[in-house]
Length: 319
Image: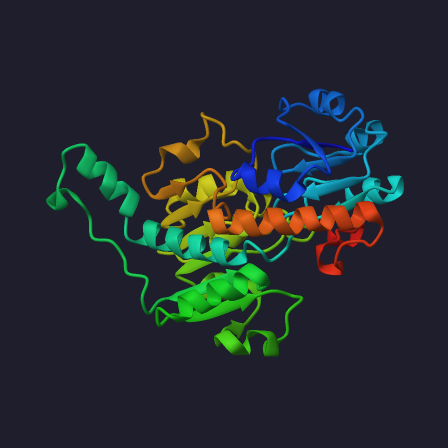
């Protein structure tokens, strides 16, 4: 059987070893729908990252495709309705990168609040501390977490360890779900108005797309910062840029964007109070090894008819 991996995935040796000789692996495809369709000719399994959209046209054209394995936890780039209609199984690994993303969320919050990246650049340019402005501590402040699932709950635990008041907004979570972290469940408006740090950790759905818009930024304190390690389209990028330009918020830490890779001419590159990274919050060695091993096992389960665990099986309801 043949398998396509849409790009080189590190550590590749883990994928190669787990697959063993059961799949003939081809790695890499040009970043276009036409190239992907051509590459899928005769392929039984597609291992995909977030690099390319797996559309209904792509799936319909891939006549031999049996299983799509998403390397990661977000499934928004795969047309699950089309896959279901065509009888193509889709598996992913929700939760396995949660600790890494939560850790990175905390890191971005500290980097923005304490001007770490700006001060690194200042030092590299020959500057010293008398040329810096005072920055803001994280300890003892209020954080608002938008989305209280696998990642959000871990973010809450990290911030609670810094003596912070933790607020959470998630319409699908009950108060007892937040008890272990001591987070206060509240509505979005209240969270935005009270938080010094607003961190986005929700899944991208029709409900969350554009959730953090101009109205949301207007409700935030002008001393607050926004962190997004979830999905770019949850935050209106144009509204974020406007808010930064007008001083409605104090800064942002971003690992995800509406368009990826982030265009070279994006105004987000121009702000000293924005720390932007290339969608790497989940990409630790340990996380990738866990994801690849679990995903390959899921794929083989789908191929041999035993199936993948329900938690790791993506259906149209996941969108």
